[in-house]
Image (cartoon, one colour):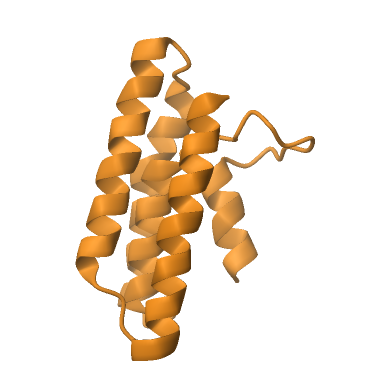
Length: 116
């Protein structure tokens, strides 16, 4: 539960700053997504060490990265959109423990569907 709250705060902070930069400068620095991904990776390791590890959801990280890259390569998405989804997939690879409703799809795919 605490890791979900930390993930939420990190996600809102980074995505909020990315939205601000995109609005004002029409560019989001690559370092932002790298830092967000590294923090997400650290939280994923912490989740593994605490025993709340969901292997199935973690297996969807490379698949979501591939899909985001394909959307970028086909010019259906911009670079910041693809990098943002890749970083968000590492930050939140599984469903948070707080929502009342869940989907049959892994959480990163639900994010992908909601962005369309």
